[in-house]
Picture 1 (cartoon, rainbow, N blue to C red):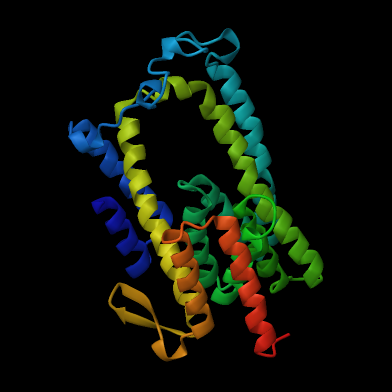
Picture 2 (picture 1 turned 90 degrees about the vertical axis):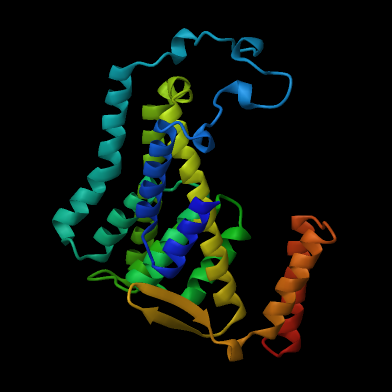
Length: 311
């Protein structure tokens, strides 16, 4: 709880970059595990699961690793080198041709960094993306980030595809010598490439050794601390989304390293607030299903726009 709270305060109030939060949490978890603290002792293996299978020997896989799944360091390094070239080769080429300040270089480098620290899934990564794309690079406005998130939530495919929307807008607004649409299309493709290709690197490099690593107490302690930190980061995203959805304007309260986005209360969007409250009541009190709640919310939103003359 302390780690989650500290992570939330760090990213919400002090704008600490997500990678630093992850690194600090991993270091704390590592030290805690090495010191023998009970809170960092994470049970690993099938024995931690509840159900009929309590030990590896009781599962269909058994305790022995099949021959085709045994770790092969030489093969892992070889395939990882190929994937590493496929991932960073295009980024390096763009850097050489276009320069370090080009928007495509920024996209390639930023989303490559994001792909390395996407602990906690899409919601944790989106907190980092919103922080950098909106506040640091200025690629899009908070409302546009909300539009992208809404579009990603209501279309098939992984939520992380909202990153393609970010890359599209960033390139569209800074096309250089290209036409805006061509630049935007290339930016979207580049974003998708550097986001997903690293996944194959982690899988081919790490998966063969996962059975050996899952019993490592120090690694388990580090991962448990990272998981706690991610909870705080996701809470930050929830607060950020709520503030920019329910209010038309925000103000930044600054005092030294402290920077907090506070809503301007007079700009409250009453229909959005009522709809959010109704959805929360339906989910938590009435135990309504998520699809049902989303469907009714969409109908209510469309109805409000039509009644308000926004047709």
